[in-house]
Amino acid sequence: MITAAQSRAARGLLDWSQTQLAERSNLSESTIRNFEKGRKDPSINNLAAIRAALETAGVIFVDENGEGPGVRLRKGCNNA
View 1 (cartoon, rainbow, N blue to C red):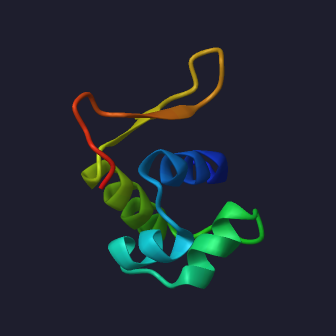
View 2 (view 1 turned 60 degrees about the vertical axis):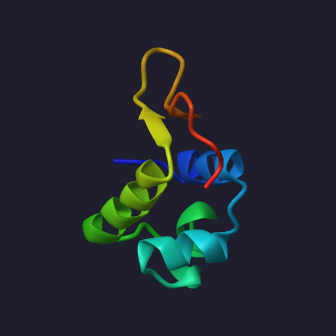
View 3 (view 1 turned 90 degrees about the vertical axis):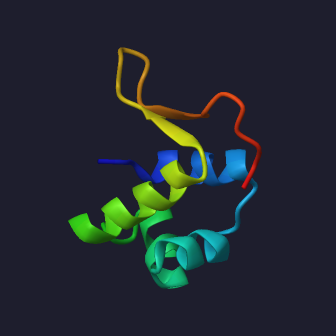
């Protein structure tokens, strides 16, 4: 669905902290921290919540296309 690296990169594009992502995805900060540090994979529902929060803010997830997965901001999107 999304990788820990994509989550970190998406937060960087938005200038969000782990706390901000946790708040916007209605998850605990420890869930975000453990996911991004590779300590524990979140449930499918939690991954969906993370992705939805980031996409709502303007992040586009780029699938693996020979160069690896990535993220970018939607055109005209200001950091949320």
